[in-house]
Amino acid sequence: MKEHDFNPESLMMTYGYKPELSEGAIKCPIFQTSTFVFKTAEEGKAFFELAYGLREKSPKEELGLIYSRINNPNLEILENRLCLWDKADDCAVFESGMSAISTVLLEFLKPGDLLVYSNPLYGGTDHFIQHFLDKIGVHTIGVMPHHSIEEVKQMIEESGKSDKLAMVYLETPANPTNHIVDIEKYSELAAQYNTEDKKVLVAVDNTYMGPLWQHPLQCGADLVLYSATKYIGGHSDLIAGAVLGNAELMLRVKTLRTFLGNMVSPHTAWLMLRSLETLKIRMDQQTKNAQVVAEYLKNHPKVEKVYYLGLLKEGTTTYDAYKKQCSAPGAMVSFDIVGGEKEAFLFLNHLQLIKLAVSLGGTESLAEHPKTMTHAGVDETQQQEMSVTDKLIRLSIGVENEKDLLWDLEQALDKV
Ligand SMILES: *Cc1c(COP(=O)(O)O)cnc(C)c1O
Image (cartoon, rainbow, N blue to C red):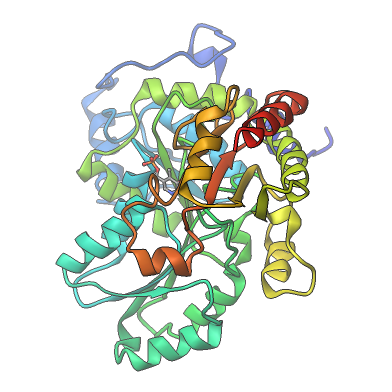
């Protein structure tokens, strides 16, 4: 038989699941169980030897099922399917995006280390870095959108801690302004600080684009992180996270997950298996709608500026990075309304189809006001530097009919 490389979207219904192990059920059942029965005591011993790293895996050996904090078929099948999109060796799923992010930061940073991170960051990540990592003595350098890569290098050198640089953490495109960071350039920068006994890791929060439109591991990153609550879950009905990377790094992530106990539940993993079957068509439709919405807003007299990747100007460094690392502009559209908080709130309060809520990536369109909602915790001067002002509105575009979305935007803008 001829070998054929199926595309990920063609494999989301079947990959990694063996019906014969589940009474022939076409769909993977929910393995709502805490523990698994060993056939023999010898088998139990062999499983634990692998789980606790007491010996190397033999070539074809897989870790047997032990206990649902360590492994569970719903989690394993989900992780195998997520690996296909990012072409990763391994994946770990978590009970939230924040637990995926905090587990990675805890595993790969220790007191005295230096972390470089891009701004703006998701509010929860920002809080964890500023408040928790600071408390345990991790030094940090926050990069602003206006800093060039040369300036970042200078900041690292001037910190006097360049030998302690352990990780570069990026969020791109960044929430809420779609600011793009060049993953390849930052990977090259990080590599300049590698030593014989340490590799400076590059971790990328790919929630806005992934796993479809951007593949950070292919751009030189070591770890890719997701709030799976967003596009991967896609229906605003679950909270989850994921981390992907090479086998060596993922073994460390999974080991810490085992001991923090922050893996996703079998039921949530099962919901995500269902979500993955429609991931491609959802995200395709959402991106199509977002392009129409962005074009419409761009030409509206009550809109001052639109922050959308599809509208980036050719010849800029952000455009070049976008073209290099993203294959579509995505479905997040932010814009400055003419006026300030009053006008923004009037618009938000008059939307009929689009719901006023935080979060993103679901099938329904959502609108929010970053300055007073998702980014309310960021200090005022930093908000300004990131273009998070009174007039900024963020939209997450869903799968609705585009005509209905335009109608809703038009009537709400008319009220302003
Ligand atoms: C929502 C979000 C997170 C946090 O994920 P949770 O699932 O809410 O814990 C992290 N990063 C980005 C970019 C997000 O949008």
